[in-house]
Every structure is written in structure tokens, then in C-alpha cells.
Amino acid sequence: MSSFALVIVAGGSSVRFGADKLWMKLPDGRPLWRASIDTLGAMPVWNQKILVVPNGKSAEFLSLLSKDWRVVVGGSNRLESVRAGVEAVPEEVQYVAVHDAARPFVSVELASRVIEAVHSCAGAYPSVSVTDTVHWEQSGNTATPPRAELWAAQTPQVVDRALWLRAADEVADATDDVGLLASAGHRITRVEGDPMNKKITTPSDLNDLQWETRTGWGYDIHQFSTDPARPMWLGGIEFDDRPGLDGHSDADVLLHAAVDALLGAAGMGDIGHHYPPTESEWKNCSSRRFLVETGHRLRSSGWSIVNLDLTVVGERPRIHPRRGEVVAAIAADLALPVMRVNLKATTNERLGALGRGEGLAAMAVATITRPVSNSIHLPSP
Image (cartoon, rainbow, N blue to C red; front, side, top):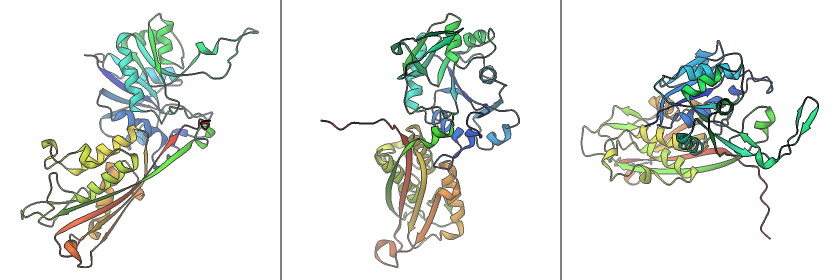
């Protein structure tokens, strides 16, 4: 079976942007370079994940990465940076997917297409058609190649590690990874690219983006367990208050509401669809797993989580003393700044089952956003 590694290149100087574009903030507060890290990094196919960074910047990037990522220092041009990443991949790994961190809106679906296509050749890449007429000027002569034969290459590009390293030894610089293989006589293949997989090169590339924003609402309620030793989990934190809530998983009512709000905003169904209580896999499972996986689901579809507003309703436990811990845990699981998560708590004024202390309820409102194509759609005649 073929093996794959992921190399994301974040070693550029951002000269054309006029500032360090990789640290520009996305709507959810993440730096731009983190978007492709979160999307592609969540794919289970990788044997190793490597981020290539500028010299002297390793600590800044490492502080925001999970432990399954390795950071290596790039070179003075793109070829040297890609080579540093590819050489860091173990020899036994056959294929390396190289992606530019400056393409933050890459999708799992696109990367999967490229991975599938490479099995029959030395390299594979995504591309989109060229819509402008292109003139090629060389030594005073102008050639106009047919547009139908021109394709604008994107990343990730997947290459055979050994073949690519041999081809890279023969050139001083290159801006395209599969192009090296083609120049060396190896067969490469092309797959349909994604217009949203844009490379951010100038400020207008970000400023001209149009964003789709959605809101989702979640609600959950659980009664207290009859087991006096049942742990109380709320917001991913164990409270010293017994008994806890009754349920198939850990019955974390707050995280269940948060997951439903996020899934609802993205139009992805509900928590019962993705983590059904009829399956033994989720028996006594930590609801933090639901939250982390839901965050990955959204980001793999291009969504950024802008804000999560949460409310707990019930007589106990006391939320306020541990509010900061809950907010920090939820923010960490969703890779959000803590100011993007808000938590409130209230009683039910002794009314109804909640007021009698029979259980807890929680509500959540999630706001998410993603860039959309600015293509003009003419109305039907």
C-alpha cells in the first residue's frame, strides 16, 4: 500500500503582499497559515506532517501546532524550502503532498482527488483553466499559445519522493513541484482544481473575497443519573458534584448543544446522526471528542468558526467558579481564541423539572463563515 507525507510550505517572504501575509487573521482569529494546517492535517492518510518555516521563526509556529507536526527551516527560495521539507520525510514514505500555506481555502475533497490520481504516475496536481489570453515573449518574439491548452496549477501537488529529489538536484530553482518531474521525463497527471483554492499573493486577494455567514442553534437536556458515583462532565470539565448526568456518552449537555449548533450552522445534520447513541463506540465517550471531530468536519468544508455563545440552565453545579476553565477547554478543542467562546449560566427559578433540580439543559448559538465564489450567476430566462 502506498504511503504519504504532508509538507506545507510557509517559508516565503511575502514581498508582493507588503506584510507577513501568513500571519494575517482569518474571521475566526486564526493566522492564515493555520487554515491549511487544520484542514489537510486532519486527514488520516499522512504518515508524517511537516511545516516548512522561515529561519528564526520556528518557535512562533511550534507554539500553535499540535505535537504530531514537525517544523523544519526552509531556504532562500521555494525549491530550497520544498527540498528541506521533502528531505525530512523518511525514505520509506513513497509520496509527498506539497502544499502552499498561502492557499488557506484548500479542501479535503480536492486533496483526496490528487492523492487518488498519483497512484499511476510520478506526480499529480490540481489545476483550473486559464480564461485570459496569454502571450509568451522570448528574445523579442511573441507566441500566443491556445488557451484550451493552458492550465493554472494549484497545490497540493503529490510527488514521488525519490524521483522528485533526483529531479530537484538538476535545477537551481522552480516554482512548481510536478513541473520538475515532467521536465525530467516522468509522467504526471492533472485533476480538476477548485476555484476557491486561491493563492493569497496581494492584499486584494483577501479584500476581494466574499464571505457566506451562517448561524446555528443547539439545545440539549439530560436528567441527573440515579448512580450516585456518576461523574459530572460539563463543557469538557469534570465537576466535583455527584451524581452527574445520565446518558450514553459522558452526557455533557453543554458540549452536545455546542456540537448541534455547529452542525446546524453548516447544514450537516445533528449530533445523533454523526454519533448515534445506538453504537457502542460512543458508550461513555468523552464529548470533547465530538466537539473536536465536529470542528474538523466544518474546517474540512472550508468553514471558520467565528463565535460560540453558550448557556447552561439548572440549579447545579455552580458554573461561575470554573467558567474560565470551561471556556478555555472549548476554545482549545476548536482551535479558537478564548474571546470567541462565551458561557453563561442561569437557574430556572425553581420552575419545572429543571427548577426542581432533576436535570440540566444547555443552549448554544454558533456563527460560522467561509469564502464563496464571486462568479456571476445570470438569472434563468
